[in-house]
Image (cartoon, rainbow, N blue to C red; front, side):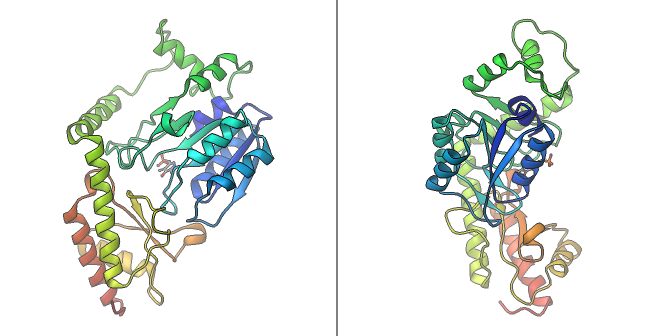
Length: 302
Ligand SMILES: *Cc1c(COP(=O)(O)O)cnc(C)c1O
């Protein structure tokens, strides 16, 4: 995230942020620290933007850079980027997309969507240890880098210097965490063995199995159908149920850790990851049974 901001947001640039959760707030904060003027379009946590909203906002703001979160881990919402990218291209702006919780678990069609800079992390749906953040830049973005006059405020994340390493000269920049590259390579080999499409399908069907099981218990989802992540689920905490007490029971009785909501969703939703090797039918069924048990113990009737 910071590499994308540092390299493509020059001081004084206008950045349009589609705000709808914690990570778009983090993008906002970083862009401000790098000297940008940030214009935000606001929606409640859990909602997403339509193509028409994206177009109107970008046309009004005329930004140099547009940023959105493809998979918002704080809310469970999936923001398709096609409309945003189309409008950004019309306005001559570069698009940054946060794909941390989607890459490896849901389709991330960077070029088809028109994303210029996409970044992710190794520790989510790729299923590797934390430590690396894959990033990709479109030819348009690379062209911007080559033309950029002032160097970015971050030396470590300076992609122009890194290009001199990755391209012809192999000029020393920093020592890479080599063991992490081996870990990522193995994680990608595992993905290749399963097949990307099959992996997406597995995440989708396990997510749907989970949502169906919750519905059977009478638990609804925070995010509207069709706008949900397959990797991160946000069921609503039923009325009268103590969110933290249920989480504690799951942990103590089963060693299952689920997360609470935070920010405006504190106490209102649970955040339950079903990603990478964690996304299995066995895990879903185990979790549903454990959740039913914990809720019953808390005096709630399914
Ligand atoms: C996890 C996550 C990040 C940042 O990853 P760290 O765990 O803080 O390294 C950024 N964006 C999204 C959407 C995430 O889910």
